[in-house]
Length: 104
Image (cartoon, one colour):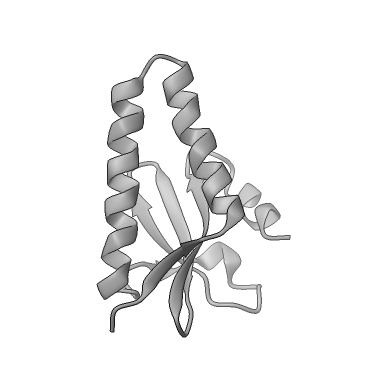
């Protein structure tokens, strides 16, 4: 079951902000490495959509969100009929309460 990956606008924006943060503070090599790692992890979801676990902090929502951990980041996604939708790239060094606020 091969599915396509679709990124939400919020996920694209948060990922871009993360990469720009490292780029702006002179750590271009880490920004590039992070780009490769997150991209690779999301590509794994194409053939293994249930690779990530059900995200416990989002259980109260009416949708099953899953998360895949890559370094300090959670890739928040859902498995939908025709695609895997990436909703957020979340830095796990933040308060976990901030994650639910992003979905309200």
